[in-house]
Image (cartoon, rainbow, N blue to C red; front, side, top):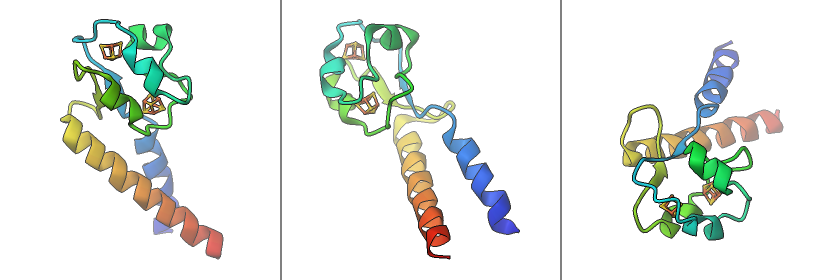
Length: 102
Ligand code: SF4
Ligand code: SF4
């Protein structure tokens, strides 16, 4: 019963974007070279949010010299947002692996 409640809750939490581009972005498009998943095309960058193909791998963070792209979850800091993302991802993987073994 508890797992039936926890799983949808975790999926709900993950359904919000964890990556955002802030107003310091100069639209230089340098970060697009770092994305292997075609999630940073000009339209996505202008919308300040990666495209739907984003895997949240974080490779693009190193590609922005202005630090404009970061993990963002609600109004939390990038560091806290990244940690929440990691905890949720590991938890979900553990839950799904556990379910797969049943
Ligand atoms: S996190 Fe990964 S998939 Fe998402 S936009 Fe950045 S490089 Fe692309
Ligand atoms: S996020 Fe950074 S690298 Fe990407 S377009 Fe904006 S300023 Fe350039």
